[in-house]
Length: 192
Image (cartoon, rainbow, N blue to C red):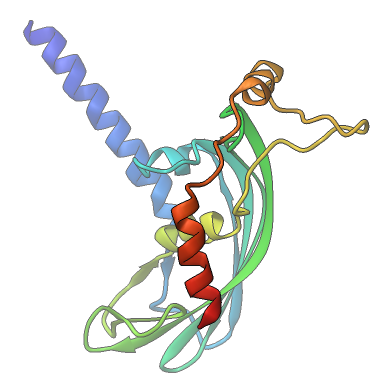
């Protein structure tokens, strides 16, 4: 029993240690960098998405190029993201490789404490050594996803969704006619 508990704790330590070391690459050093432009390249994969417990993305491969321009009182980050993520299809719920590509901007200012000035402006204390970009990468990848996520159609115009699910959807009963009482409300809506 003691041996099993020791192994379990050691395994948990290894997982936590791996997560910490994996995410260290997303800690951008901001002290000691001269006012100039420098760049970083990252690869986001399954290890990244597994860290976020409630993410609908479970795997993928996204290349991130970060161009960083440091000025005296602020840093401008320009992110370029390209790749794919594996998400469930909205129609059949089978895995779907969704291509993503886009660019995002982030400005980090130095101030007295941590706070968000706007969607693209973050303020961090002047004494900070590093800036963690991982939550922003997570958000940017999700923002690049389309609203409707379904398998594409093949050359013949047939959906690449699971054929069994498509058959069940087509066989399901059509919705009943709307309640006529709603028509009266619709007339009121169009009169104003």
